[in-house]
Amino acid sequence: MINNEKNIKFKNKRRKKIFWCLFAFLSVIVLLLFVFLKINEGEKILQVSFLDVGQGDSSLIRTPEGKIILIDGGPDNLTLRRLGEILPFYKRKIDLIIISHFHDDHITGLIEILRRYRVSKIIYGPEIVDSSLFDILSAVALENKTELAAIFSQAKVSLGHDCTVLSINPLSLKVKQDDNNSLITKLDCNFKIFLFSGDNGVAVEKVLLLKNIDIKADIFKASHHGSKTSNTGEFLRAVNPDSIIISVGLDNRFKHPATETLKTMNQLGIKILRTDILGTIDIFSNIQ
Image 1 (cartoon, rainbow, N blue to C red):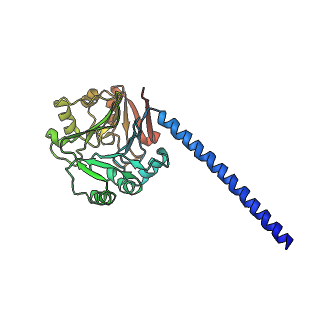
Image 2: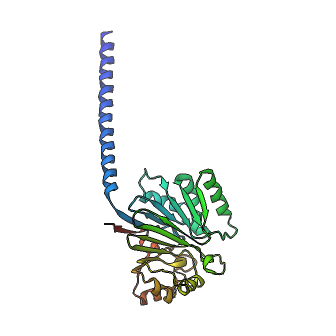
């Protein structure tokens, strides 16, 4: 009987010791996480990540004010994995998704992203070309109370101090409808400018030049994965970027990027960065 009582007391004492050790350990973890979050809150950094999603397109923007914007969602759920590699586990909200157009390699990955993240708003051009994927995406968005907004002309969204994103629908510029027509999106954040052109072809590029639209940018994401049907010398000279990003899959069947397009870029002295060679490309800018 005495031995049983001693055993019970010993076990209770051990349980208490284990409890307090776990409590101390978890307290340290919470404290470190709190400090980490406070440090990050003080950072004013713009991050634009051109995600390595194979033969497709997806770009992630993290603004100095903490806003999360996703432009396109790639061809499959690899985009979801790429988001997990960049966003911390506690970041489960996306403030804005911009759909450039409705090709599978730009929107398929968005369906599962909508299921896994809280997405506040999606904007897109209204010229939908019979996309069953967009029908599914719309249904999931409706179920999750995500706002859907069609852009008939243009939309400008404030992302915090000196940081805006502007999207223009080519149809508003009187460009003939085409499956490749895409929203032109320009991110201007503390005078660091990024231009995203989806799969727009030569027709859209010519109209942008004709109407004197301000397309100058520091970083340009190549149209249509570096296709020869886009990225003319005249257009690239007007954009005048320091670097050009080509989102493209390794050994893809479309032979993107085109040899003649790469030649034009090299002749203009533009630095070329490719996701099939470098993987995800992160560009950071410190904001003063």
